[in-house]
Image (tube, rainbow, N blue to C red):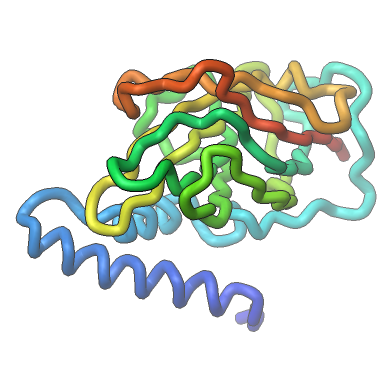
Length: 208
């Protein structure tokens, strides 16, 4: 087997999260604590597809509509958000972002082709993450989309959804540089939404 030291800390983090989360879930007598839920979701997706994807050197910026089954990858940047809703009774919100590569035809319970989670920013409705990463190469389908969900971090209970946005992959072809996307309210998210909530993202689709 190939030794991959860059995966040791992520594996340790999710293992600890799962153990702690399972304990809290058992204590509450309900569902798993969010730490455990996150660990299970990451395990389902698979190491190598969760923020550790590498793009081969011969991939180039895609300038035209790809063919079905063509090998693509997406370079992503999560920069900042503004005017997020207040979720906490004391304080504001502790936001983080989960970005997923999905297909329109898949159900919500299907595992994404790629998943990345940012760090959390404490007590800030206008957070800045400035995180960059890339997906692993995947075979293109016309219904591929980028799903971006913003959460409010809570240690002792489920994380509240602050909002989301969906971006068809076809909208990102031949498009580079930061762009603003409107954050829409989630039906099962926080009730008090903030007008003008937005997130600044940066994408580049590359192809074999």
